[in-house]
Amino acid sequence: MDRYQNGRLKNKCALLIGATSGIGQTCAEMFAQQGARVVVAGRRIAEGEAVAQSIVAAGGDAAFQVCDVTEPESVEEAVRQTVGRLGQLDILLNNAGGSGKADGPVTTASLDEFWNKMRVDHFGTFLTLRFAIPEMVKSGGGSVINMVSMAGFGNLTGGRSAYASSKAAVMNLTRSTAHAFAKDRVRVNAIAPATVGTDRIKKMMADRPDVKVALATQQFGLIEPEDVAYAALFLASDESRMITGHILPIDAGSFAD
Image (cartoon, rainbow, N blue to C red):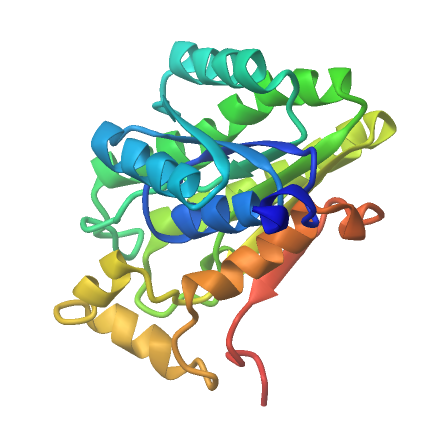
């Protein structure tokens, strides 16, 4: 029990959007292990409740909150419920995203897929920032971690134009928001992983050549969700209190010559 009370995030209150599986779930578990009180948020109720219950069973403090990042009322309610339960908001993780099955080069990508990516990734992040940051300001500051991708830098093999453009948009939203709220001691950063070995990605490897090609550039191999969660833990903690407006790549050696 002591490790849940004396960790690097002791007395911190965190809302994790898109934390019902994969990277978000791993971050929620790690944050709780480091002493944070966490709210796991997402659209999948059964999965989200299971994540929260497993954290509680292990000695942490967690609850589930349904949240659809494409609906302003849902996001506003998720923030309201989080603050009502925890008393304040110190940490926000934005990890909602989709699969992008109909993506491709700009000449062939589905228009529905383009708007879906912009609605979930970009607009969804915009909404969570809109409603969460005022609560962080009331708390005297906080840390926002947006989950983007190496694709946002423009190095995505396979021409997934909708995905790449939505992630690039969130990168610039990260920087502009960091500048706007630095005076309030609200830090806003992003993490840009290359290919991460979540269950969803591992299933995609069998029939998605673009995933295999992208993975081949990673000299360290497949990134694990824990690798991303450790970076999120650093950005959530006071150890990074002088860092804002940055995009942290986790590329597994993709750019190492």
